[in-house]
Structures are given as structure tokens and as C-alpha cells.
Image (tube, rainbow, N blue to C red):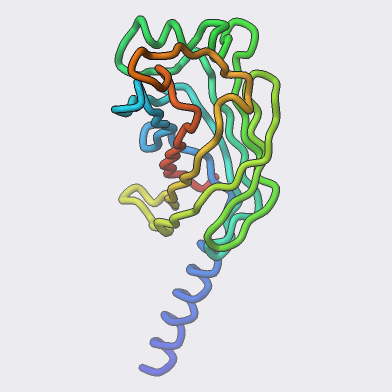
Length: 188
């Protein structure tokens, strides 16, 4: 009888873990961040984020089967209203005419994700590093997973060309933008 009880518990755990290993997740914006860093005046770094974003992904045994994300460009936030307004203008994101940034995964390995990033109506292939955080059940019984995507893009590839030269040499805004996307998702 004891062996049967233990076997039943083990079988239940195995079935539960196999079910938890494949799921479609919705990005939880309250526990996720879509951020970036870019050089300013060639001597410091400006950090920013977007506050209005959504996404979903299909994860099976720690491997992405699909992932897509959507960001509202008008939600850019660097902590400085004047700078944010400039970034929303036609000099940069042109949020009035190009309100969305999108990303759609096209391929993946255990450590890299390839996808199409669209900004200002221009779509380019990008490669991002994956740092998987794992899968857990929260105190309310929801299955959650987490991961971080990092990489960099050249802003000029997407028509974000505005810049000014500085007297000491160099420019106001660096071309390379580092992306840091920290995601926690809830299984649907």
C-alpha cells in the first residue's frame, strides 16, 4: 500500500510538471520592463523604458516556440519630460505617425532569439540573448515564467537619425542602443 501511495504521488508530480512545461503566456506588465540604454555626449548613458506594452509567448520545456511583443512609442519615459517629448517627435520615433514598435520571433536556440523588429515602419532582423529565469506557481495558483532578453541595435537602421556634433568631438546621441527586456508572464 505504501509503494502504491508513493507511486501515485510521483506520477502526479510528473504529470503536473509535464503540463507546466508547455504553456502560452501573456506578458504581465506590472512585473516586466521594456528598457534601453544609449550613450549621451559620448561620456554618459541615458536609460529609458516604455510603460505601455503587451506580448505573449509559447514556451515548452524552456524553449520558445513563439513570441511577439507590441510597444506604444508614445509611452517612452526617460524621466525627463522635455527629452521624452523630443523622442516622441519626428526627429526620433514620430509617435504621431508611427505609434507602434513590434517584435516577432522568427527563430530560437537555448541562448539566442532571432526576430523581426519594426520601428517607424522599418523592419530589421535582430538577435537577442536569452537568460531564462524559470517557471513557478505563484501563491494564487497561477503558473508564471520569467526571462530577460538583451541585445543592441543601431538606431539609424530604423530611421532614428537625429544628432548634433559636439565641440570636443563626437555627437550628442550614440548610434548603438542597448535593449533590456525583462519579462514575467502568466500562463493563459
